[in-house]
Image (cartoon, rainbow, N blue to C red; front, side, top):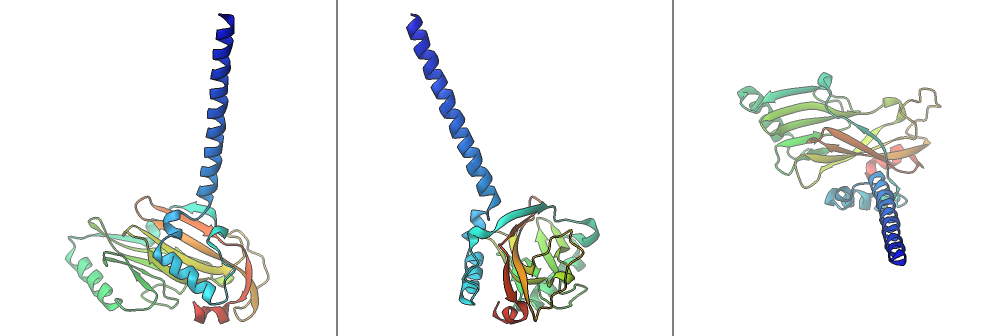
Length: 231
């Protein structure tokens, strides 16, 4: 009888140890996966076209596995957003006019529904600078007009691509900028015509959950002015 109880205790102990080991492995795997680009981004048509273009333009050292999560932020800032009802006739008219004007304009990404845009043109336009990204379009029963992203002008920031995933609520923006941390204020300037150290940041913007996940590549050296025409 005593032997049977010991056997049962051993079996229970083994079961607990196995379960604990499986749980630890799952946790480690989840943690690693979360630090990498989401699968839905990496496998998207927009990302595959983007990274293939980089590899074809002598930037073949850029790999999807190299991007690591570095920060997570909220995207809506009351200072930089305007919201209108879709029942507002004038607001709807203004949106429709803008969508029609920008239909075939380079560096303006349209949502699958074609009812929203991400304008990342590297020029001054409609109150936005070359270092700001403009989101404008319909979400549910609201018209959202917002500066959705910006970057520092002193680190040679350049937005090179934007694209929506297979829905109207998640889109991606890629950014070249010098390998300077956000809180660094003292560093040696480097002109875009000179060779500098850069990274690429991939911003994954989720309108539903009000989140911006930022993934960063490994540092590399390029002359940005020579690369820009190829992007």
